[in-house]
Length: 590
Image 1 (tube, rainbow, N blue to C red):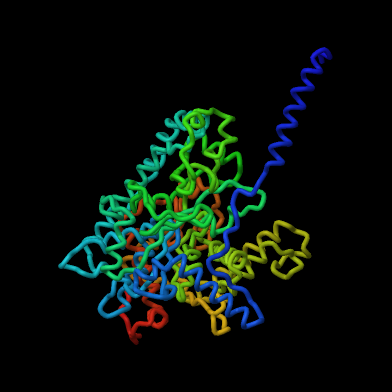
Image 2: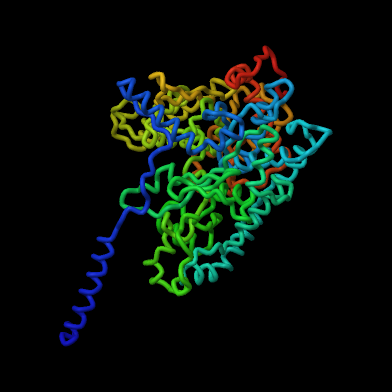
């Protein structure tokens, strides 16, 4: 070392350390914990419960009174429907469920008994198709779900993207990566530079909206005229972490698109939709599963960002005070890191919005915080082991944020124990090992035990369960229970003969030939966790991988008929739930 340079070097080191200390000491709360719209607390004092119930009602009326007026109501919604994520698989299954729900009334009511429909990703595909059909005036077939030509067209055109297109789009995204590097890396402009995103949006528009550009706000009048349910398209606002992690709260990260507004508790809600924000764009954002910001691992995030793999979208942050001066936009790296405009939080110039499944893949949170009394949830996510991950994730969030309990007894009995057992020791009795010494035997035993637990789920071929969300207070001092019907995408292979023959049985036989290993359970991909292997090999119906976005007509029809069949088999329970006349018999698909 040249000792004569030490004083100057010492000064540089001291300045650098001082900067680091300054930056670390300036860490601040970027996202404030906005008070929940409704809260459920087990308060022993009935007077305190009544006071909390009144506070909840006032909060709901201030927040959602405009939605109540849409249906000429003066209270929270009564009946709601949540459609989960899961790509085109969820869309097909959800449309089948919606078709049967519409036909539970005589004559079919096109879901007019519902107050709100909430969709995520693939569930939002189904939601978009339903509302587009609702907007079409026709005299030949007034009921949406008897427009067989439209259903046939949908099934034929349901190939969103096949494997060659996957590769082609990734190649085009890669070609644009230098532009992404300059605009977003050098200058930090938060520009949308991924060519795959507008292409994906155009496919959504073509398949589910008939190629029409329809703005979200244009549905206000239509919904009131047709007395149709309000819709919510759910996405996820990506918020940079702060020291308190308030950005992870569902109230802050669940980003809603409705005919009235878009936003989240963290960013607030804009009552003015941008002119270019149409239905297809909102749905494409809700289904932007392939996104670097939500990938696990910092290395994977960095690589994917460099490769320009981002289907999410930057929207203008309507809560941002003013347009930043031009010189700030020309400030290169690392200077822009210290300006408010670059921040990805409520103070930033833009908000990054991506797949709704990254926050709440069931689409239920938006309905629970509106205090909807009865919720039908359609769970069609990729779940070959029937672990119900989205259920358990939402359950924990509702307890943490709203102070209420979400319980579906059948899930708790068949999967709750298996979920706990995965982290338990041999001594707990979960695993039949040899004196607890063989760790491999322990792992295999756990897997075997979990499969046995999963097989219990097949005991009821209708796959329809009841649940409850409890803990919200009522003014009377009693406890309000939100009733839930939980419809799970599933199939019992041991009773395959009970399912619709041409649509379900034949496609199941076709799909079963794709099994990776004959020794695997009926799902065919139970131990296949690699995204690449899922893309290449797929899984067995009805748990084919979400990466399969190129459905054939037969494939789409199989999922749609399965949704119709499962709902039909539980028609009495659902009719009572919806408050329509109960029919002793109903003709289900055969």
